[in-house]
Amino acid sequence: MAVVTTNLIQGPATLYQGAFGATEPLDTAVNTAPAASTWTDLGGTQDGVKLSVDQTYSELEVDQITVRVGSRLTKVDFTIETSLAEATLENLSMSLNGGTAASGAGWKSYDPNVSSSATQPNYFAVIMDGYAPNQFRRRVIGRRMLNTDSTELAYTKDKQTLIPVKLSGHYVSASIAPFHIVDQTS
Figure 1 (cartoon, rainbow, N blue to C red):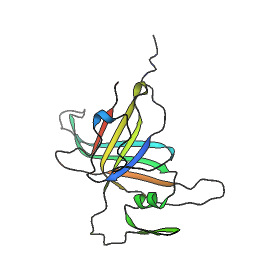
Figure 2: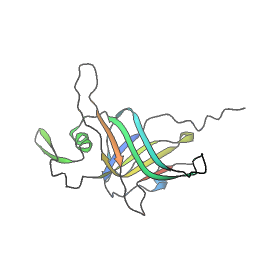
Figure 3: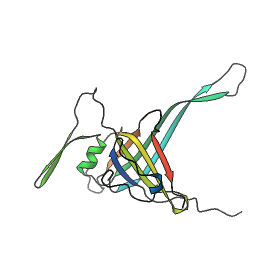
Figure 4: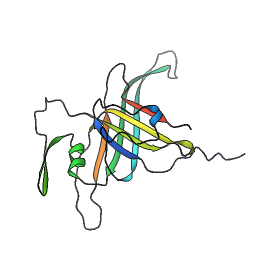
């Protein structure tokens, strides 16, 4: 039996951030970088970029049968996780879901958002560009994202400073899926 190796995938992914509702690249442009005027490259990452989809099903049962008779999808969570290797104020702002930036001659600053908990969060879109089978490209677009994990900036003598993020996807609308995946095929 021959071993098929063309479907194996290995290699890094690149993350881009855009505004919620930003114009998405066409599926036919899966092998090109998204428009820099709309999408910002978040820079290098450490330990890979991971897409996770967690589906929760409720079990349906009846007294007369011992085997589960069916299931209903009751919840879907999806996340894109990584550690941003470029500890810039811009990446810190993204990891804290917004805030206020300022700059001047020789300096720039960042202040986190401290508005009321009733304020709507600053959702954004994310593109994850990586590899697909046969050395083609794969693009994952998260359309309404927030970082829902803790943010930290650790400065240590023997380790690189990273900004860990767990970007959670959220419902968009009945006609727009919360994420979209496209593979290049030729």
